[in-house]
Amino acid sequence: MDNYKRLRTAFAIVGAPSCAKGTCVKYVFEDFCKKAGITMIDISVGQLLKRHVSEMKDRRLAAQILDDMNSGRLVSDSVVNAVFADAMEDAASLYGDTDDPLMIVLDGVPKTAGQIKPSVSSVTDKFNVPVSEFNIVHISTPPHICAYRMGIQGRRDGIVEAIVATRFKEYFEKILPAIKLLKDFTDNSESEFYEINGQFMIDEAYSYQKKLFSHLWPEYFPGMVRRIPITA
Image (cartoon, rainbow, N blue to C red; front, side, top):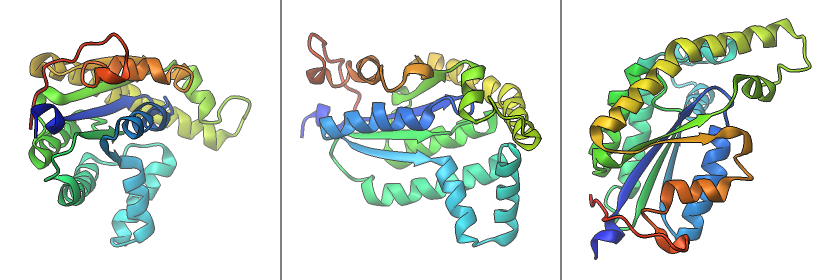
């Protein structure tokens, strides 16, 4: 088994609420992995939290998560980190020993400063991903576009407006400072920090794939040269 086939890499997708993180996962990452035959592990914290609420294993905790989500507040770091760690345990039991190329995609985590170290440690420990392969994709979408996607434009619903206002307050106070810390993290770990525009995610999907993956899998992008792979 040559080193290239053992390549493992991770991408954490971050940005403002409704910036197109889920669209990025589908049209940029999932589409490329299907074409390239790469195993992709997609961890969406939002979906994990919703599943936790629906299963109602802990009614008090489920009620708190639901209240936070419905009001626009971020769920506490302790809850997010615990739910994420459980999901990584499950994923590692299925894919941790594979020799195939592996891409781990994190949607919505790390979202705050308190989630950075646990998420990085979980990925690097469970899947033997080098820290230098824990990359960040910052989807930079103008706030007014995000607000439009959340349904605020054209509606004068006070409840909806309050929720959107709370989500953006959380973004500016917690998420944006964490993104700046993640930029420092990539500088120190020699991983990559990518900026892509969330307004044109579907139309620009191929160009974003080229930007993110061409140095690892150049055979899918004519004229590109492979970087020396870092193995697990």
